[in-house]
Length: 206
Image (cartoon, rainbow, N blue to C red; front, side):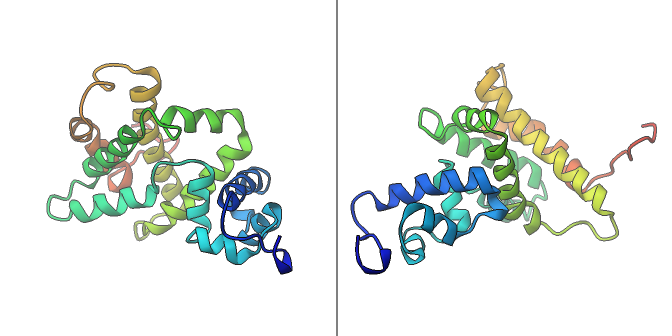
């Protein structure tokens, strides 16, 4: 080990950092973990963590073996749907397209779900990560309460994850065989309503 405790930036240093990050996120959660804590657990300087990873979100993606940054799905969908206004359809299509590309790898939807199902701490860390990378980047509707905003976020998450679970875990046709674009056209309007349309308030008859 080099002076000051810093491990040279060669060999398995990156792998050691990823392993340490996985353990740190699982024990401290996403919000509670820090790059310095990961560096200590890996036995390297914090500068080396910054050398390999562009911030905590990038490190979490590597530690959880996620195939993509969920924030990018929303940003791309938002940019591509400016003219049509159908952000929900573009979001569903982009979300499933990225998971399609991850099929057959160690970062498939099934493997990620398995990791979260096996550990509540991992699931909690993932939820905190999505909150920072996605939900906190979307401006709430003016005048709506925080509880309504949280309801919208929960409904959108249930729609996207439900579609992915049906497609990759249960493999129910036609959801398992249709193209992401087709599923986007089917489910996109529902996602649009969840994100910005009228919602039935809890306890109020529909």
